Length: 245
Image (cartoon, rainbow, N blue to C red; front, side, top):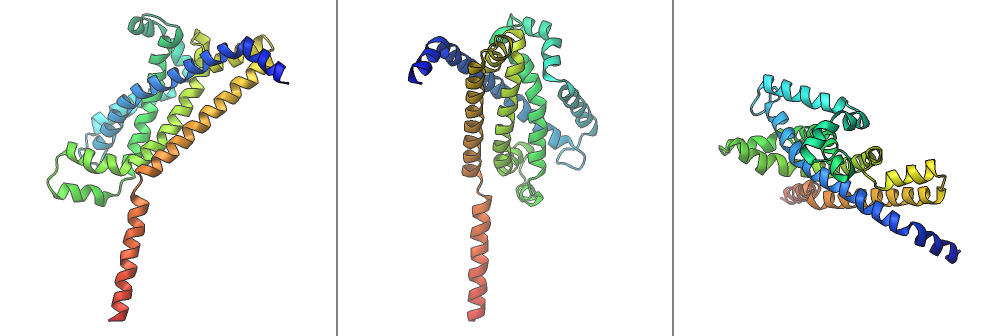
């Protein structure tokens, strides 16, 4: 058994290591860029929605229309469709660089809608309290909306990262490499099932790490549960004091 493992690692270890590195880069870099775009879009969609802080129905409808169109494209179709644009921007339509524009265009609208939904779940009382102090819209966004919505946004990061991880497997069609490409090339075309299984196991481990880290981060930034417990304790203490009187 050890000899078989050593032989496997000697033949495919470097390939799998390189594929793992390429996959991580293809997941993290486009996701970071997408969050810069998606966060801004989500905030604008929330602010300009009817009945929100700065309702602008025309702008909200136009942005929503663009976001919905981009979300309608299957990733593989979008990737092929924008190859000329990718070559113009990145200088190449293949490889890791060639995957960044389609991954960003796929993830950004998804993130925008998630951020919009997270902001919509913020209690109106939190916003009104800041408004009552005469705060400007930027101050309301950064002092009330985003801090209150942060736990939900952080949990959404896991969903986005795992979705982008799935997209990277399709990106192998344009020679981007990565674990998905290795699993297809060696497992399907060359019938080396051991490589496919190891690639799949590594992908599963990456997903579990992403989910665990994001869950931990969400719990760390979520102070609402602690605040509720503290408030409940204060109310109980007040009730006991009232009974004693």
